[in-house]
Image (tube, rainbow, N blue to C red; front, side, top):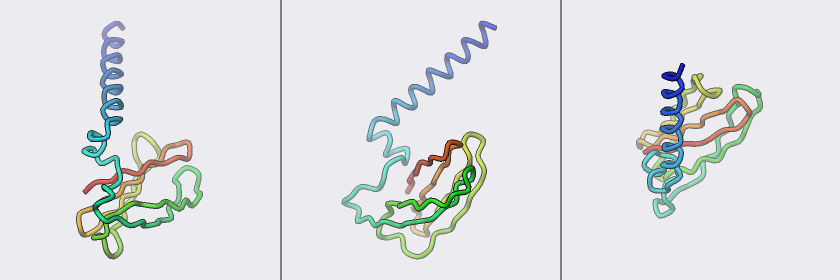
Length: 112
């Protein structure tokens, strides 16, 4: 039992360190958690998604670079933690991922 407790405390400390690191703006940008910089010429792209748990349609504004033209490739899947995700991939290499939680909320992550 003490061995399991030690392992759980190590995992908890690691999780807290990751959360603290994501709070740092530069680190969050490297992890793809921020919108593209404003000097990059961005535009708003509104998508309407259906939340997997509530079944409600939610309009979500995505902040994407101006070079993202045309319709993105859309994929969705269930996740182990949370309720699922929807991924939007543009041909310019930019990606927006909407992750849903079980309480009805969501978070948007950007990469590219």
